[in-house]
Image 1 (cartoon, rainbow, N blue to C red):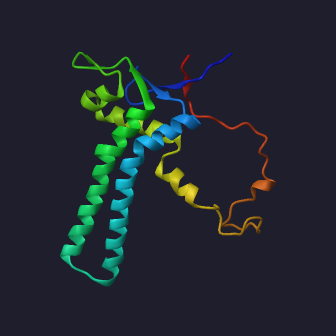
Image 2: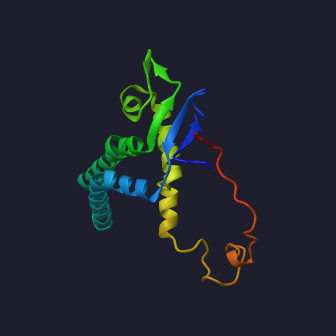
Image 3: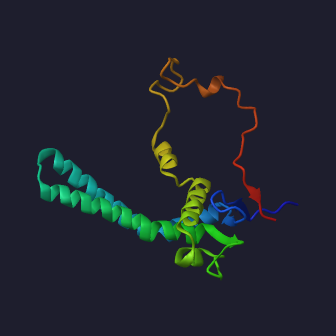
Length: 182
């Protein structure tokens, strides 16, 4: 019996280094939601504030309003950098293999955050986000009910995608190049 509990990914940026990611399950997704609840609330409140300022900017102009918009935008970036991204990596990264910086093993999320290479941190974050469906493109697709301007079942034109009903979906899907941990 094959037992899956993690995904082993070879680093593209650091040859010979592998990282082990948590397998996405219903329970692990609930744990992620809990881990990000406070951060997401802060993010949502700050984003709402930014949208309010942008609406105000349509009716009024001025350097003070522009500075405030820039400050709130920077606050959103800091939430990602200092709160959300580390929380996602702590949740999704189980271990790192074959990496040390200045003779200090980088083998966990915390050692990666404290002492590891920034490029590897972002590579792991991207892999977790892709695996968990947390990428901005995935979120955008969730909000979009259709990929074409035509009504569901409508006619196809040069600007619309073909109906899924007419496509052969019996072909196997291709998966990303990820080897499974044993």
